[in-house]
Length: 237
Length: 237
Image 1 (cartoon, rainbow over the protein chains, first blue to last red):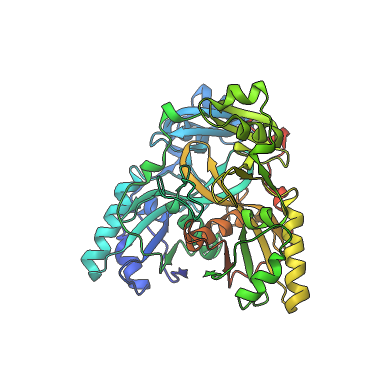
Image 2: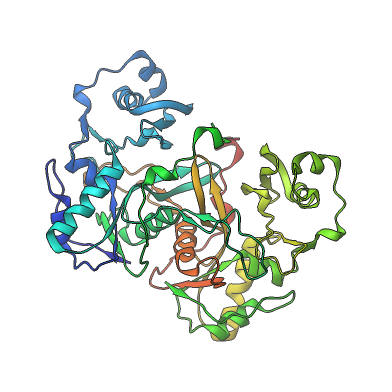
């Protein structure tokens, strides 16, 4: 676990791959975990609240908080899952179920702005992976991460919202343990565990938005959207 | 992240702290992550299905699987959260919401047996921590982990069901980021992230049930039960 220190504050249009390559020595097989806010800011996914006119529904959901923030959340949502004003758990347009549809005010580039999730975090991860290969020749994997709450448990853990160059799920389906018992429920969300592990070293206030996991040696490829439970299998819709 | 290799198959009555100390060099501040099955087996939390008489309810929930296993799940459950026979998501008597109330058939000591969660996983973690200190003088933290599924996402991640010698939640409440924005939603479930990180090195089939996380240097103490969302705050009951 290697935190990547010394990255500058990211602005719209910045080349995040170049910034990472400039700040860290990379090896083949490294997993680069990037907090989504870096990616979102570089991609211009920042909204100024002064440009937002809140709807009546946003005002209802806001309680005593800023209704313009709730309006942005509604625009980013495909479906509201639970609401307790001003708290909204929503399914984002990507299919992620999380607080505020991923809309975040902390670490925004300026007061009065909010940061959205990347438009397509898997594509963002793939672009970063490609950019690193172009610049260094290194074959790395990339995870774009965010902090999500969980049903029934307190606190957030970082999980993978975008992924490239590694399989997000490690499937032991059909393998057998040492007793010969089939491990039929053993599909491990390694991309989420990697994102959480990286959070431990990134810290939240040290402004270290990127960490490298070395030695995991992922074999295969996949997208973070594979981690989404399909509606027909989802017991919690 | 250091996997602890060479542990023997654990049996009822075994001293798990002594086994770990015999297999690994420990430092002050190490976090020892132990898969709960090791602890459960040592504590005799294993049920032979031959001793179980399934109820009518267990038969209903079993579909075409063994109704005796469902009977054990019902006994371990405080409340059924979702059922789709033979799948049961239940709140265990500890308050954990998970598949099968934590009752597991894989890695059971013998065919025809199932392994339950420890009676009090926080107490198990504390006993291990105490045992390591008695044997080595080292001041370590201990996490007892299990693989849990998640609402809305595929795959399992390892999380903390028992904890001693570290704060399971890292609370940035009231701290401010570099823009002066208050990080009021930033409570990180570090014990869960540590358990997940350890899973990455433990693997599932290599039978490495223990891993050490070195360099995290936890400061404080707490119980894994602090990770449980209290019913009055729980939007997903």
